[in-house]
Amino acid sequence: MRIWHSKGGKVCRVWVSAALAAGRLWREEFIMRLVRRVAGRRALLAGLAVVFPVGMAMLAGVMPVQAQPAQQPTAGAGQVVTVYSYRQPFLIRPVLEAFTRRTGIKVRTAFARKGLLERLRAEGENTPADVVITADFARLWALKKAGLLRPVESEVLRKAVPAHLRDEEGQWFGLTKRARIIVAHKDRVKDGEIARYADLAAPHMKGRVCIRSGKHPYNVALFASMIAHDGRDATRDFLKGLKANLARKPQGNDRAQARAIHEGVCDVALLNSYYLGKMATNEKKPEQKEWYGSLKVIFPEAQGRGTHVNISGGAVVKHAKNPQAGQKLLEFMVSEEAQRMYAALNHEYPVRPGVQPSELVRSWGELREDRLPLTEIARRSREAARLVDEVGLDH
Ligand SMILES: [Fe+2]
Image (tube, rainbow, N blue to C red; front, side):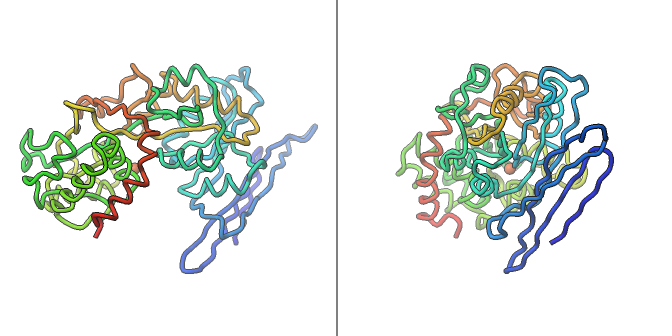
């Protein structure tokens, strides 16, 4: 266990990280808390580290961050909203800072790669969290199922977030969306060879398809949408055909499929749309720009039901201490200003109708999205995962 403690001016941070070996490294838990002025002094005092039982601490890389103070205090001055976020700091901090500038409400944030559900459950009524922000839909669904969210009645959110991208009981809301597109080699795949997801299973694609694991939530959500549209039997047939067409066993992440196309392993793959933007602008790994340069973008089902989309989203926590400020934050995040900024940070699509995505995202073509409610997809996710196992897609 390591404790790092620094004082200086106004902020005191306590960071506790616990490392344990039992075949694997468990890291983490922390909390920073309270920053208070003591009468007459500039002293600050904070402190408080909450260390969870290690077995429960499935958190990795959680670090408290203090948002920028409001430049112009407004009606919200003095209020604080605490956010637990699965989204990486660089994706969310600019939006939170804009919120503070607009409202005067400060934002405290803890970032995590995983484990927030367990943490919220463990904290119960004592949780400091008001809002949870996730990078995908499956986690919001799981949080709702676990009874950790509270319904939000907000005309602003209802108007800004289309019905298929939010919970019917107001327990979670999409904040950005991404399309599950098909990428193809720009020369080896002729225009018109692929227009639908079903074409990935067509005989002319034999040995030309790459995918990541069929059990990954991105693929499970897509297959669940196919069950909703085409039925279970048709989806099983699709998965069998897809398996027969694979150039290699499912492996790697989305970007690894783009690389495989670039390197001639296969000709087509499924990809979340924002990865195109990440590759196209990757200065640290410029080879990814070459992968991007080998690809052309296909929006499947553009002539029919529309391309499957998923979301990043947000929700107010059941035991929030400041649910009003939490709601205000979500409402701000679907404002025109925040939508433009937030969607562009990860090359995603705004959920708010009428707000345009970034120029780069627009350059890929027009997204015509499948409006099947995400809740319908969630209800079929388990069935979709079972079908993946049944046809042995990953083996
Ligand atoms: Fe992703």
